[in-house]
Image (cartoon, rainbow over all chains, first blue to last red):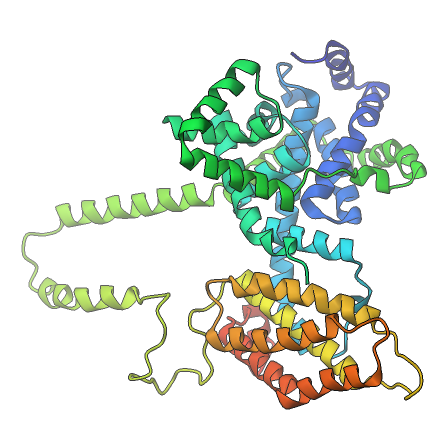
Length: 184
Length: 302
């Protein structure tokens, strides 16, 4: 059931009230940012995506259907933007990867990584190796803590599909990250 | 949906205690009698252990001033880009289509294959009765089809060497991501080994190797991951094992490591000729990796 107060804010923002839109931004900005960060794992990109998502939401408020939650609708925009950003980033990395191998200058950052960063990097890599839908489900459901129903609305699929992809995604993550459990 | 599938789908919510009592009881009852679903529960428990629900909020990593200015930044973005409503809707449709293409590539590929098969079937049904030139083409068809499907995962046979084949070739080409990870692993190992080899220290003082030891541990963990990659060549696997021995030695040096401990590690690097082997492995990976078109155009020797 959509939040009545929030529904009123959306209606006012649709009529052009900047104050109402600001209220919506303030309500959702932290969760929106956190979700974007869980996808892209970069603060700068997460900020960019979260801001852009609010702008897109405002520009297409007319297309927002009142039966859904504004937050769920916003998360869908963030998911789309994040996946597209990752796809573009992957393309850029593929183009530049051979140039990186040509460089023989030692990378100082290699020596500065802390243990937590190391584990975080492994998790990020393992996530990025999952098929896109499984990755999105694991991030939205497991890491961001949304309900199965919300994830199904965001990804436009059934709750059964979300559950199946969640199990498969978690199963693959276990295989990929199992080595972290063993100590040197 | 069968009972196993139903239970398996409910296991996540069973572990996170989101099921209502009746559903929970149903799952527990099934688990008592079904070893397959019990195994699935173990798998999920282990997945939770390696990927726990995050305790930290990424938003909390930003200072309060950031959040105070955030709404103003969004409004500024709106002012700078005064799009009309229909432009916003078009942008949303474009995003929806792009993400659909990203998430459902499999469906699109299947649709494409199905359409292609239908087109071929239709063409075969509607072809002329007996065209005189059709026979030679049909005779050539089976070998062509056979060539299109080489056994991707089989090892290259020694008895049939090909002149054009690269001298150092992996057993099966690793996926793009694992090739990147293998290269990354070799690159970091190389930097570390060069650092240890060139380490200057006095006979009396004890050098601080904590950073090198930390990196070693990370590389040993990475090696464990890489060794389970199906596309990894035997040569690369062998080198990873050799590197692992030295890295474990380095990681396990005591805090009061004396010069002799470091010398043993250095001796291992020299004896196994590890730096040379890493360079060879890196060039093998670069040969196996398809070169991006943009680089080819720039006149790269690759």
